[in-house]
Length: 486
Image (tube, rainbow, N blue to C red; front, side):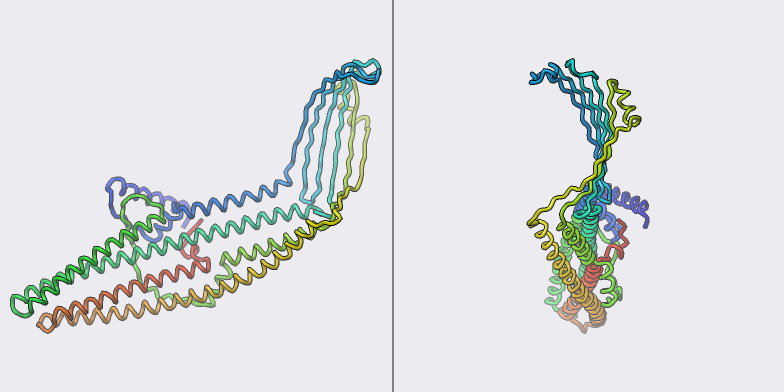
């Protein structure tokens, strides 16, 4: 489903919920599973928190990339120096105005470029200075290239890669939290369906009990039954009323639990549109395991963690090297009493300056770098073991959940057959009642047997649906199966 139609549908649903609650108080609203998922994805607090946490982690990427940002720096200063001088050649007042601006940029290759421009104006009252005031303009370019530690920006680029992997891991973990919330919503919805169908069953039982009571009341007049049997059917009516009241209260509890997950306020009672039905859908271990290793996020998170540890180990190995940088500077300057001429002489007079050198820093013991490297080696080994552990856990988890799905499916089939048999038994006994060949105890016992079989069938179906949700959640394919778009 496209996002726009889904948003329109969700808006209509939320308006309808507000309208019912605000105008009519405790009203009923019927929702399908799809409706609940749409509302939950928009309203559920755990889902909102998970989405925000994922977005927060993504901002670590530009933070890591910021090492390559261009830095612009500048300085404007003015100095008035009237201090006493030890030399007679110095004036009694010296004024200096300085203007400087520079831009520094680190490239992905690790090369650091610095462009610097400055202009200095000097004035003095000394009679021994010929050019007064004097403007000095200078333009320089400096390159610094690491050739051992952080060679060609290896560590800088590694930090960016690590931040991207961590953001991907956070995104996967957020999706897992969202999927867990979706699983909770689905389970809560099917539990609501179970309690709703239980209410409908209790209503039918109460209706049957009243009908039996009426039949026995008529038969008492004709002498077909004893007074004790009438009492027994009357007690059965009261029992069914009590069971219905409990079932209705359970329905309200189930509705409130679902509303809590959907973050819906108000007293409106949620009633389900869907029903528990026999799906006849078995689970295949081989296919489920294959799906899990493709989609399971815990497994993917650990694979990314291992990739991260490998990158860190290479970075720490590179950090063992001493810092050796090749440095080169080229500069031009121009001097004149006038500002404009000093600027022109930057290029026309070609007064150049060249510098080339090698700068190094060598820690003799190098304890920190060696300690970090050894830690990185152990972290990599640990990541390999954790990945193997997750693999085994996935295999065991999928096997357990596949068996549970198939077991619950068979149980649901068995209870459906038992319910059919108990229904036939009850119907035949009711027919015998017309001819006075049955009694209240037998009919009530048979009704109880049918009730138990029906409840057990509903419960088996609920467990089957729940195990299907758990299996898809374990494979991390529940969002896809549910048609959830994020």
